[in-house]
Length: 143
Image (cartoon, helix red, strand yellow):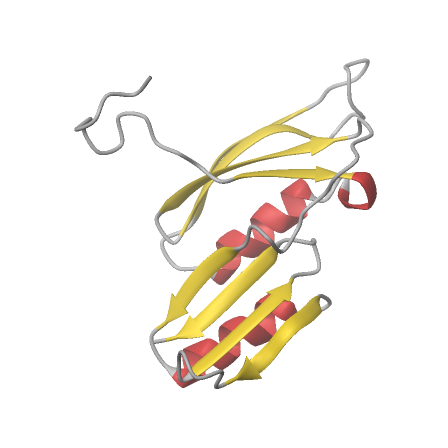
């Protein structure tokens, strides 16, 4: 059990993205895309499977990266799973202005699937919810 009052960052909780099924092998491309989209982003490490290991050679065994100051992890998994990414857990981003909002939604949603197209839904000036081309779900809100 984690004690209350721990110091910030002492035991961080990080989003973990697993690229499996039809998305298997896309982890590195997604990481490169995301880190090129957001400021204050960088790849910390990408470890890949080698020849004769448990997964296909060259796929991501474990990756650590930062998006806009938030730590993330990702892997590729060739093992069969009865699940994949779902919109019920999404990455939420506040955009400071309309031009930033439009650019971010345009870039991230390209090749994806729009769940709630950009609009004023009454709770913000402009909001969009979509799955990107890698299957990851995003909510973008214009503050």
